Image (cartoon, rainbow, N blue to C red; front, top):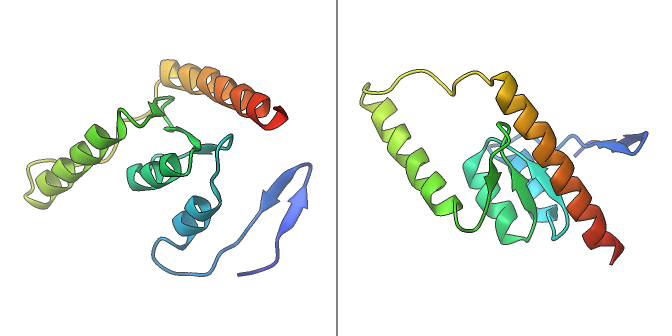
Length: 118
């Protein structure tokens, strides 16, 4: 792993190369009160297990109640893509998605700050 660089409260961390190395780094450090933003459903599941709040890039929160269905849909879609039934990637984000993401991110960060303060 290379050295860390911190500027204005933002830390850049470069992890070793390797399959899921970045996901592993994030999941191993996610804790209650933390906010993780990801479109990666397996990473979302791992971070939820650690007590972190997890927000999808489209503004949809991942929760203990919703993660099982999200993992199932991901597996089904992967199977359909392999069979050539389903193509393409995720849909483009709309302005509504961006607005929802911004609002939910603010809610998650404020909740995390309150949790860390207590």
